[in-house]
Length: 372
Image (cartoon, rainbow, N blue to C red; front, side):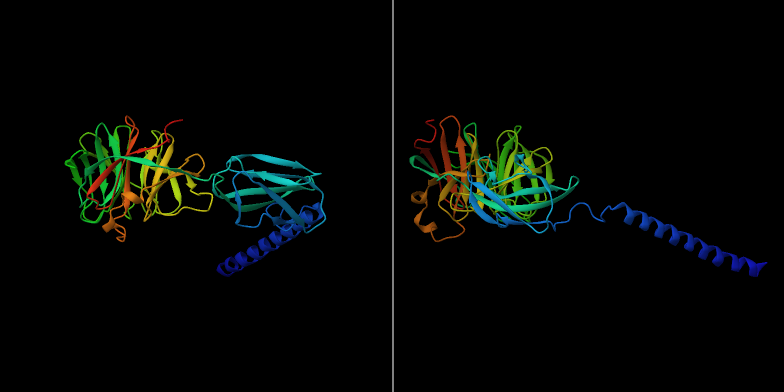
């Protein structure tokens, strides 16, 4: 009986395998007789995109021409073009010239998905990336120097905002980082909170009567009560570096030293969008300290003496303010003591500007900017 038991199992096992093999062969035979191809979607072997070339550069407002080379003879029912920022465009089977309008597109890389529908039920999709420059020549704005105030020469200014007659300032450098409230006329520090020595302070912004502060490479931020600078809580974020920060009352905008503006939802500090900032000449890198001013974002560019004015709706640089005349002579060759710090006074419509380790704070009035 023991021997029989051992023989029964392999015989049963082999018999089961035989049944499965026969069943599988029958199933394969039925599939081959049905005429259904093995892969119906996602095969990019029907058509080649001739234009636009991958990464080709156009200007906002251009109509990007699309052309194709068909590798097989098929009946194309329709072609659909889709991007995240625009409504789909569909072209019928008797399509001629196909163009993608870019008048409402954002600057930077745009990706259009082109889907070919053919033989009634089949389709093939290609993603086509191209780059858009701004179609705006930035307007150069002049300014009038209104006043000069003292500024802490040890303050490595990384963020600057105005509220109710005082400035809020974030300073950087490990072991010297802080957030502080500063009296404008004297430069006196009224309140100050030092960061832990391992943290490097960066941009700040207001939201819901609180102050948000980010750090450089620590991927950590802090929320303070605005009047007292009492710490409410800290938060983390996945963006590898924090540079500038500002807000429009609903969302925050953050830079990381590249050309990107990251759009942040403030409650959980989660990224909900991004812009790639371009002028009419190309991408603008090293965006630094930020200030939201009447629907636009004013940005310092690391190492540059001008302020760029950015449209947050599309990433286009619409204007520039050249401040080279305000840069102190001894700072012009010092890569650390660069222009950095923009605060807007909505009552006077004036800007306060300073730099890292600068002993002065300037109040300036833009000429012609707020006239419209």
